[in-house]
Length: 135
Image 1 (cartoon, rainbow, N blue to C red):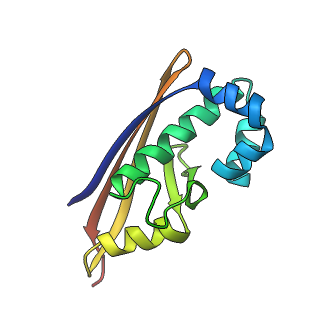
Image 2: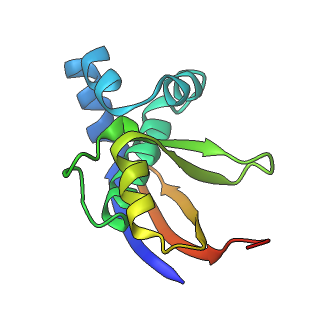
């Protein structure tokens, strides 16, 4: 069952300006150390950050809170499965909100799609709950 859907668009030029203006203060507030390592190794650094920014916004919408009610930027981390598929790992307030949304006997699955065209990026998040196996 679907328990949340969110989408967001971001402009890498805007992210690049924020990095230029605020530097580590912006990056430390929004991105996890793992996300920073990945983005800082990429040729298209601002685009990589922009996709992750959009993913976090989309996830916060799918959680139904936005970036409020104890859900913070760094509670959501874009990670890759062994297949390379992106997903989100939630901690802190985001993980607590997710747990509150999932019915007993179910487990959450977070589906993330990222795309870009030039400096524009988009992210779509679907949070679903599936019956636990072996229950």
